[in-house]
Length: 348
Image (cartoon, rainbow, N blue to C red; front, side, top):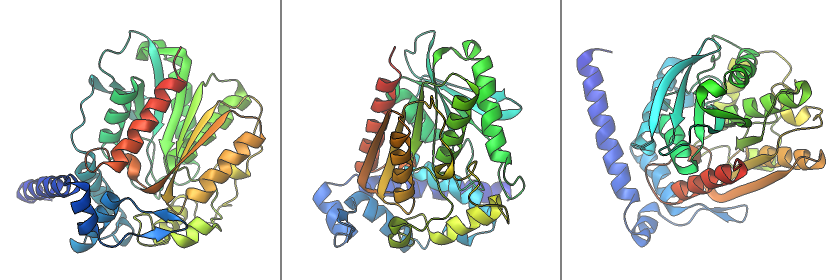
């Protein structure tokens, strides 16, 4: 892309961000009228501001990421995240290397010299997403929770298929355990977390930590991908029209797994034999999300294994609401709740 085209794209992105923020910030009755008749499925009503955001995307004829070549899909993922993420304040941000991978440390304002730290793995189906796509969400989570957040830029498929991302996540967490003090982290209050594919990686890290005796105080799993079979009611009900589509998930699976076993517990943690000593967990799901049921099934599996687990479904939200911290009301409120629960879980 030429410099001129890049500048024009950034200007267009800012115009879109301003427009979306203004429309979703209108009084709730106005947002309801603009969004159209309520969407009710499976006994749940989609939040009006989320419904309006989806409608605006359709009206703007924005191509779904799954319809684009992968390099273009990666660019579009970053653009979408910036539009809905906005500019989020945080105490400080530092880029660094973690086990040979690019990473970014977010330190909240007024953070103590030593405090809890969350190692974060971004979502994106293992083939899109990076530090930039989740920068607003990580800033928000760190500042609102008071917990340091270390985001890790693991390798992506199809250039680096399974088990590359899984291996990277384990290597990153082991590095953090060894360098916790250098990061300003209390070694007794380390956590792991992520959204979607990142939730999958976080679950895998937590399982391996329990098996090998690595310290881990908490796991935050936001609409985690836990089972590649996906024969659930939510996968059928919400396959189209709610941001995450069955086409996207098919590309994710083919890019990351190829012809490998989809039931391998390293990629389908719902199929794993859960070890003793697993860290307590908060499992978050969205009502209008194809991954809802498998995330909730994993929460039940954790509970049956004796793990202290809390399941929180946000019934009016869609997959990707974790990134929506800069516009609208309901997604930001949900993310505030997640941040507060993370803070409470890691209190001394």
